[in-house]
Length: 175
Image 1: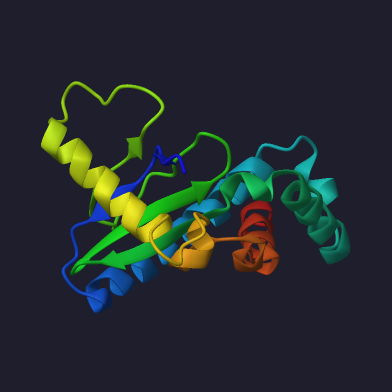
Image 2: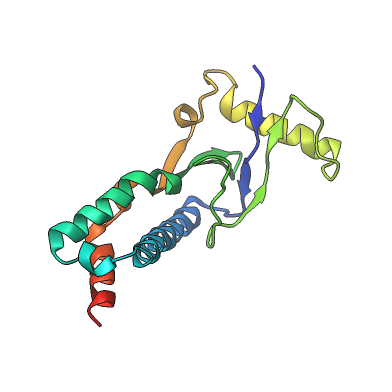
């Protein structure tokens, strides 16, 4: 089976507790960033005051925007403990890897369909192959990340709080 992990990472954390703590802080930061994005986007709407003349109209405006754009922000990592280290594969919309503020990691991608990057030694490239092969396609593995690691959801639609967004916009309009 071919191995292609373009955005693989090797976490710098030495234990699961510190890794989990970093993920929790990252999630809190990311959720706050998404909410602020929505507030800023709504504040740019023409005739904003009429769209928020009632709670129902305001919530409808927020939900329409949410339904159109929220999937752009979904982000998660599948994490693989292996030989006292932690590796991960991020999953996110398109080719946009969200900037992470609290997670500490080094790039650790591997692919076997083209040449390795020039700045990576042959030994390092072989080590990457060994790790990704072991965690994804070794004995008893099916190559599907979610079936072979554990997932930490950084953001999905359930993290979105339309009341928070409404409150921020409402306070801005009624200053």
